Amino acid sequence: MPRISLTVDGSPVSGDVDVRATLLDALRERFDVTTPKKGCDHGQCGACTVLLDGRRHLTCLSLAVAHDGAEVVTAAGLGEGDELHPVAQAFLDHDGLQCGYCTPGQVCSAVGMLAEADGTPSHATDDLEAETELTDEEIRERMSGNLCRCGAYPGILAAIKEVAR
Amino acid sequence: MRRFEYARPRTPQEAVDLVAGSDDAAFLAGGSNLVDHLKVGIASPGVLVDVGGLGLDRVEETDGGLRIGAGVRNSDLAAHPVVRSRYAVLARSLLAGASAQIRHQATTAGNLLQRTRCVYFYDATTPCNKREPGTGCSAVDGYQRYNAILGASAACVTVHPSDLAVGLAVLDATVEVLGPDGARTLPLADLHRLPGDSPEQDTTLAHGELITAVTVPRLPEGAVSTYYKARDRASYAFALVSVAAVVAGDEVRVAWGGVAHRPWRATVLEEALRGGPLDEETVRAACLEELAPATTGPGTAFKLEMVTGATAMVLTDLAGRAR
Ligand SMILES: Cc1cc2nc3c(=O)[nH]c(=O)nc-3n(C[C@H](O)[C@H](O)[C@H](O)COP(=O)(O)OP(=O)(O)OC[C@H]3O[C@@H](n4cnc5c(N)ncnc54)[C@H](O)[C@@H]3O)c2cc1C
Ligand code: SF4
Ligand code: FES
Ligand code: FES
Image 1 (cartoon, rainbow over the protein chains, first blue to last red):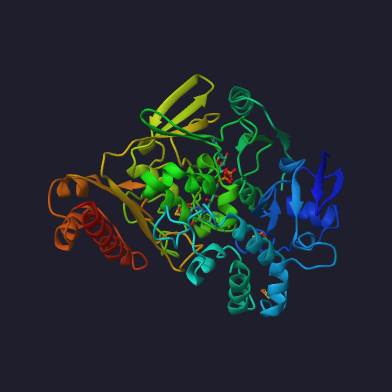
Image 2 (tube, rainbow over the protein chains, first blue to last red):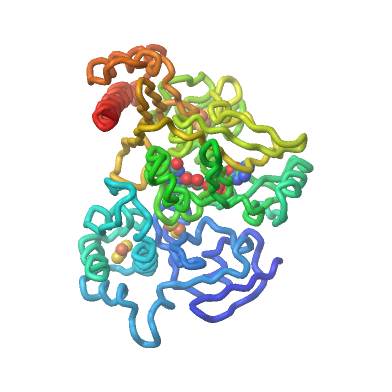
């Protein structure tokens, strides 16, 4: 079995993984990092989203062996000490969740989205060269890779809007 | 999932040698399509050759236009300043595809070579000539909403799912390939094929041929372009139909997605519209000509009006902006 090393939420982890293991399964089953969730396992829901080398990325369609040496930040690693990350706090303040299963993916995706918004147009952008203005329509489009089965979308949108301001 | 060997070569030639040297080997790029296929059992290679370390991840401006590395992520290409300012159709075709997360993972070549999303292709319990040649096609008389209306065969009626491929088709892109017999280039128009009797073959590439880059010629001065995608949801869904278009002076270029086994360059329509007015009536008449050979079933008949209306909307809008 190939051996891989990762940095997960600031701590180094390493171990042998099945060559067939996805990054999601390696994190959850091998390294006991259960923050990213398995929703669909086929790239369709976003529950497994983490920040991979600084960008929001699915973990269910990536092979662990292909990401040896990578830096992974999950929703649990976003805050400073006991302090929640502003995006996570805003999700609480705005009821951006019900069951919470999609939430770690939503929060990572939102943090990645806010970081990349400058300089990245979206399908909802009229002028491809203009500075990004995070309107409701833009936020919805940019977050469309994260589904919420509970339909907490109004709260999720409100939370992200607050942080984007 | 079958166990495989994982290789991470350092040069394109090494990667080609590894795959060409074994019938059982396949290239792996972002993995967003292939890893799914490994899980479902559509693909079961014995060797996976990761092309992520080959340095094919640059976008270069050249005298003739743009040279896009095979490994450039879809998100990076869409955000590239030159793509945003001069190739709107390219940026918009990318941004209409998948989700932000998947665009960070998906590569230029992987996107072009992604396989069909036909529900029967994905369901190993149903006959599918593309997945298992000779078993039959479940989609002909099955779920038709995403089926082709042009260029289909009795053996396969699916469409190519890539938005990027449609955007590149209208830009007259060229594909650079490295194979066991050396390097060659081919027009993007010749990359994807119609299904005919061998739907298991999506493209004209031979086993072991590696796409290294895609080049896009500069558009004429004053050209305007865009990409329009009609789908069942506002975002994160494959196309029902899509329209990529460029208007430059007298020249009109149109490619359709969601209608055929390959991006459909509407050459009959282009000829009919050359130099003429781009008003609703003229464009609709040209669509009718292009769609003359179309065949539809109860589940696909809607695509005739959908692609016609979308093309009329896109071209009249571009004509207004080109003025
Ligand atoms: C939920 C979901 C929704 C999606 N929605 C859309 C959509 O709306 N529009 C759209 O266009 N796409 C969509 N996609 C598909 C996505 O765009 C593709 O999965 C992605 O582009 C594939 O790129 P990759 O680099 O991950 O390829 P991989 O999965 O790594 O490879 C795909 C294929 O290309 C081959 N390959 C890769 N690189 C090379 C190379 N350099 N030379 C030769 N062969 C190579 C591989 O062997 C494999 O057969 C969606 C995907 C998912 C999961
Ligand atoms: S349309 Fe093509 S991919 Fe779909 S079931 Fe028929 S042969 Fe298979
Ligand atoms: S579990 Fe990865 S996208 Fe659903
Ligand atoms: S909170 Fe339950 S799925 Fe989103």
